[in-house]
Image: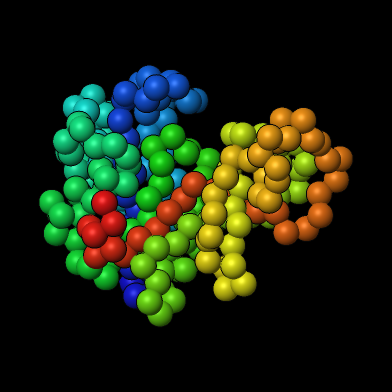
Length: 201
């Protein structure tokens, strides 16, 4: 394994979601959603897949899966906090590249996971995320689609559920039939160096 291939995928998973409780254990094609997410992470070529959870029922479902479990506290405010606990508990070296794949993303592109891991190879890179061009005018006004603004160097400056720039008070009234190039849709895959993750949370 080369240094470029040496990354892990960490998947925060909890049952207490507000919009869809029990989501990681919901069945998709007869198997729990979290199992599909683990498989997607493995397809990306991660050295190791770690599932960070506070729930024994998620751990039980993964007992025969090729994923390492990291049992965490239940009081974390975010998945990133959950992963930071694992970074400390599992003593991940500060330079280790960690890709945070959400536990409800069974269709996340394996190529996107690899792209985020590769972005962390840049000198000084401590954190990375993924975006793609947005071509659908309807998605521009969809609050479920997170938009991203970046600088000339490709660094994320701002994330928003509303179009950026846009008059906030007109967001729900304005519509476009066609998009000019340059709009970006954020894909919720993040990457961190373990040392940054430990300090960030």
